[in-house]
Image (cartoon, rainbow, N blue to C red; front, side, top):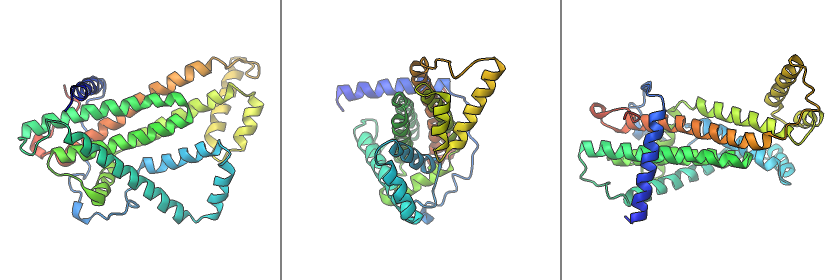
Length: 305
């Protein structure tokens, strides 16, 4: 392992450890994760859906809709059967799983601490360090939210990849490696057990910020007309209605109000939200991966000092 790689590892581990200290130290609710029957899992991902499967296609559709290909996308959606879209989506997630698996194996193979002869305490220490690395990687992904909608999509894909990488690496550290397509299916099975409500909250808040930023370049009437043309207009109209209620209460004419300052404030707010929520989500993934693969007597909470 090169000196630069070793330094990078130490930096990420130190950052991840600091982030862990900022996180809640509540123990996870032990769902029936340890009872997952690895041998009975199918290779298909259709039974292992999670919040990522819901949000990534939606974000992709929104992003495509803002390009000249948007009309073609809508036409394709109406002509191609849903089953075909689902199959294509499963193929994409399978490929993300494969890339994450290769990334995890590549990184561990170059970590001089990873050996077949590790004793229990060494495995536990390495799992903590790898958890810290991935916590830092996942949290830093929130920086991409500076780029607006494309950044939100990149951030979500990055978070998915880091979550899967975490599961693959911790499984290998505890000598229960998840290999091949079956290993990818198991990783998604575990990820599907994670409570990803925080991902839903994150996407909702980021969407709300996008709504406010859109107002900076349009009048309220222009924005309302644009929102009514959108398929998912309910949440946007809800935010607009609340804004109008508040402006009426404080006697503010929002038609003449200058929202230009939001161009500077919103991107920074989006980064803050993205990094904070990514930290929360990866913490639970780390804890659950530990609860699945670490021997029960050795299980400790990953975010303890």
